Amino acid sequence: MDDFLGTKNLRFEREGSTAWCIIDRPSARNALTPAMYFGIRRAVALVNETPELAALIITGTGDVFAPGGDLGGRQEEGDEPVPPGLGADMLPFTPIRESRAPVIAAVNGICQAGGLLIAMMADVCVASERATFRVPELLRGIPDATYAAALPVYVGMAVARDLLLTARSFDALEAQRIGLISRVVAHEDLHGEARTAVRQVLRTAPMARAHVKRMMNERYGLIDYQTMFASLSVSEEPREGMAAFMEKRLPSWIPPDQARD
Image (cartoon, rainbow, N blue to C red; front, side, top):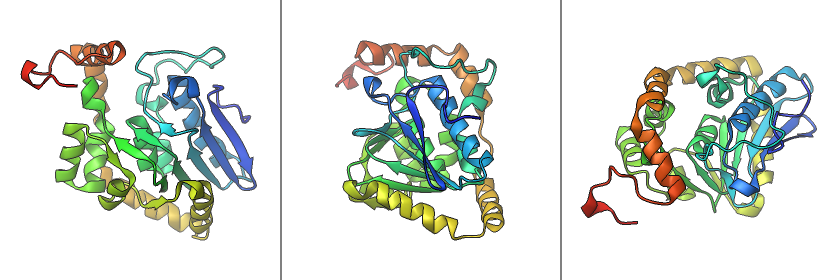
């Protein structure tokens, strides 16, 4: 496996025993295409399969970490096709969570939807003080199974209901306070603090660390992808939500007396 991750919008860079996966699609504010989701999964596999690499840092460019999937369904020229029939196996969230090599998220800016799941599943999330967060799936009619299973584990049921059902934005300090992320740092220190987190995690014994991660991961319980993908296939809500987003209008399910921008 070479260092090309299947798309020009991801860069895989080596820095000694640490690899960086850099999300770099400024033309679409780092919105993740299927090839990019699959490429991040490939980056995790590459680090775990390369003896001289010991850890992975995932970060973004500019003022955006990752805003989630590209709702316009746009593909980029030169992207390798994602193997057909993968479904949830295309997504990087479980590989990040179960990675033998430590995965650190260095959140440089806007972080929501699939981008926030990447940050949550990382072993350590180091966020810039400028970072902002949101769980917007229900605004688009998407019943996200990973959030439904994982978010209450991080923040408790009451806060999970708040974040999921309102889809409101919140800043890095609130994200740290509620337990969604662990570290908030000055923006200019972000990459250095991510390297520090790598050094700290790599001081721990690899086999023991893997056992501890497995035991913690058991707390997530069932992730009901069947309901999620069935809804995406047959429900009109995701189509209406995505159309409203692309047309810059409110979706039709909002009551008229609540229809304010």
